[in-house]
Length: 327
Image (cartoon, rainbow, N blue to C red; front, side, top):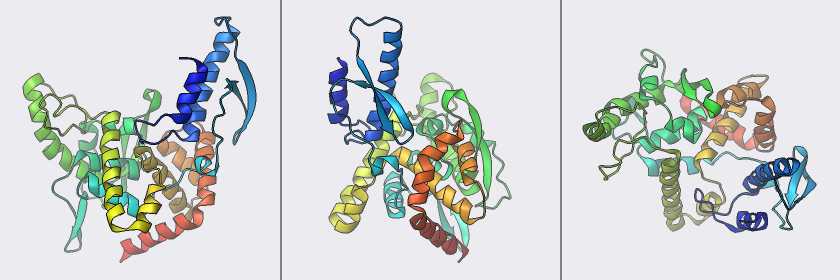
């Protein structure tokens, strides 16, 4: 495949994850990677034909890009700013994934029956900012060893996750979610894993396992690709439901980038504003540590401008949630 053809395909292909055209930011990132590879090969004399390298302006400054005569999309405002998913969108998609992990009975928060892995995986991305791979790599014993007895449901307990580059970090998770994960581990996971251990005679240790009719895959670890597919089906189911019930809500939701990774963005933006409201003078530092960014600049470039652009809207939503929880 020529570089020209690759550029053309990036502009026109449909993402297997979102089932939409690639975002401009995704195209730019992939093109930057190709540019670096081409520049390296040219500097070593590995290529018979040389490609033109040109300077382009990005939100982060000047960058070098491979020029093959195909116009790549610029980064418009929508691509420069990540956004938090609307609360109605979160609730709607999550309900497609399974029942809510908790409910209130006689004034007490109770772990619900019928917990599903996909719903809990989405809750972890939403409430702890985990990446897809980090959720899939989470070990059952890590959750079962978390000390939650006697703790308030809304305090947070740190658990260890494996991030990019096999780097370990501590991530705070709400107690109510940890208790739901524990119940999933000893009930649903154990049931699904039984079919697998009967075949292979061992426990792979991963918390989330596949719930499928196929005996070949039942009890196998959930992969990021599987999580993407399940989440995409939930999104499509929610949008289909909205289209038949509420045209206005459907138009709003259909403009959102409803992906698993958007849950991580939602966590970061909500956490930034919530910590500012609570008086934290440097919420970006906290978000950087929780998300596992090696450099503060990465966190700022992704989230700071977005927080500033959407601060009023996010503040209003968070204050409403705080007031509702105090009633």
